[in-house]
Image (cartoon, rainbow, N blue to C red; front, top):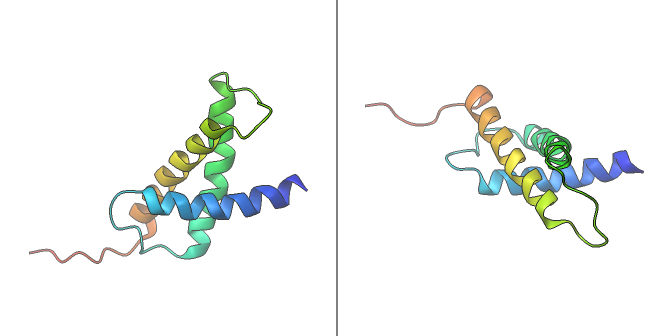
Length: 90
């Protein structure tokens, strides 16, 4: 059940990461955005735990914000590495 949860949440976090990432990030496919979201959730939760984050009784908003920021960084990296450059050079 945890794997399905991470996949669903990773897709949502990937889209949120794409939304908050700076620059032109519409040039990567949706499947890569979802992979960035899944990676953002897994890496973000690990970073959160490494810096002393603990489980709370309610929603842990800091953990989710860290996951969105990591996902945004992964979206920018994926856009830079694999995306098509649509900017015209003069």
